[in-house]
Structure formats: C-alpha cells, structure tokens
Image (cartoon, rainbow, N blue to C red; front, side, top):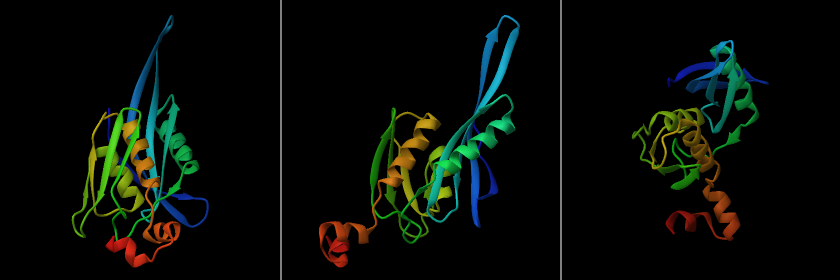
Length: 173
C-alpha cells in the first residue's frame, strides 16, 4: 500500500517543513487471540530550500504512525547543496539493494524521477533533475539511497578550496 500525501508542519523555530508520506505498510501479527494489526509509515520532510530528512514511524493506528515518522524525520535532517534549482554534479549511491543515479538537468526540465525518489528531491527543493532507480524498488532503501546521494554532493566552492584551485577551473575542468 503506497501513497504520497503532503502537509506543512512547523519544526522548532520559523522553519516551515513540508511532510510527504511515501509509504504506509500494514503488518499483521497472528496470535492465539486473533490478528493484531499495526502500521509503519515512511515519511520525508523538507523545507524546499536544501534541507531534507526521512523517518519511520510504527504504531497501531495510521495517523499515529505518520506522526511518529514526522518526529523521526525531524531528527534526521541533512543539508543538500542546491544550485539554481538543480544539483552541482552527477552522483551514484547505494543503500541495501537499491541503487540511485541523480544527474543535474537544464532549467525547466523538472523533476524526472520515480515515486519515492521524487518525494525526497522535491522536499529538498530540487526543481530540475534527472534521476533513475537502478536496483530494488523498495521505498525504504530508495529513500535512504537518495538521501545518501544528496549528502555526498559537494558545492564547486568546496571543491576549489579542497583542491587549492580557482573556482573558474572547477567549472571549466
């Protein structure tokens, strides 16, 4: 059972985070007394300006699981370098059996990505990107791999300082 919903929430101060429910999973435990249902919710939060996080919430009710997922996601926020609506460079990442490839795109291309990757990229504030999920389609691992790929991105200024070269040389090669 997979669906993506979106709401706006407040985190701490004035930072407004948007939450997206990526996947809701129903788990059934069979006991002597019958069946016990519980739910897990995979949630992605972001401020559409370079901050994104993911969380997993588990509870007996769907709404409670989503709330727990939001709280967990707020604890796992990461900063993402977004330049002119796209990412600075191509990145490949892996989490579990899920492989993710993200590439910068020209202005106006939009977010070309699948369901759970799209939720992460839009929450991070990336407006133009080409993305492909190469391995497993498991939403949990795809979200983890996408966030891992986004955290591995480096800004050109950071690369220039690390290599002790001019910024123009980073862009021109």
